[in-house]
Length: 503
Image 1 (cartoon, helix red, strand yellow):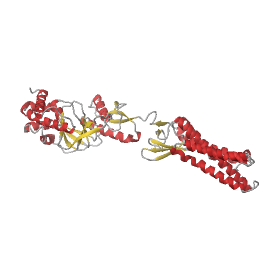
Image 2 (cartoon, helix red, strand yellow):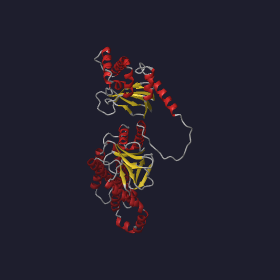
Image 3 (cartoon, helix red, strand yellow):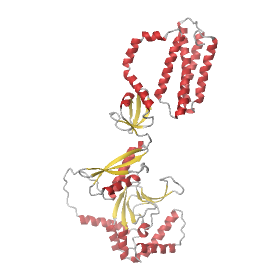
Image 4 (cartoon, one colour):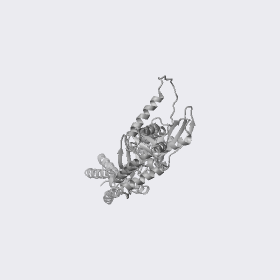
């Protein structure tokens, strides 16, 4: 039907063989990849149509010879296409568990089609060698014109054989002006590699350039990548304390891995500050800019709470009217006194004692998501929300996943937490985390000790208030207290007196 000067038996065998190869490839391919067999099916159908048309013509006409060449090419190309699918998509991919690079697939298909074309020429009694000899000059001209293209193709083959990166990897090419930042590999063809940068800009790099450049792969040998943030802190702060603050700021930032743990080092002694580097690890490189920004935010708030200055060079002299420091300090103390006076636990104190607490209180700044206190940690401080809101959280019962918590309450401006730790020294019963940018007024144990030493008569009223608050917490957490309200109040009063050494 198709071959020239071939017996009927060969004609009958050729088409079923091509159909059998095509059916085997379609059956063995994964369900989502069976569309790749369509090309072989189209070629086989074309071969049948062209072979049938050739039967109506004389074998000696030029049209018949052309139909013979086309039919033979389509039939052999269908068989070759099915063979490529069986070898690359079924055998190799199942053994390596990795998709075959597109450049190998294209080159394999091109090589098969070239061999098929040469065989089809022999089928119509045309010697392929004579065509290649007469077109030697044309071949040389085409080769010179495609020098860069051939170079990219060879480089693409070398890259795929060495596999310094795969599709989906995050890479950075040193010295390439077009790629100013890391990008994710989206496609590798025989001519170029396509990269999508963090700015969602598509960059196409010739394979020849990639083969010569140094490549950083942030996805190998694992997706874990180390990042760093540099900050300058005043010379008045001890390096060990700064290291502690920086590590604490990174440890709770979203996206930062717990292991490997963050660490800090002293980088240099600069003109106006000591430069420190904070190192931390992430496993989602696409979110690297967001995570680094969150870490910098946490560093600012943590340094501000510890009153560690981030200095900067002074470039201009600005003359301002003198500020009455005493008046400013008095206004701040008055505001803090008013904030504390609205608390139930402070209201039993006389006005002078409340004023003393307001003057000795401090203000701390927390960024969104930062933990102010943690469940189980010891603490002897009272916190009052002066700006923003906080969430009271406990771990979800039965869950071992980190960060899986239940929110018990949300506290806003004027509400307090930490009174149990302040008055009894008990560990924190819940984690309190800033939901927004928060300023909290903090009263420490020593200030409260001095006040209670002067006014021990208010301890009984404070014990009753604490008992009421503890009962509310147990109700929120579905816990069942084993003590009656009166017994609980007496126990807490005893704890307060013992803790403040008032007995």
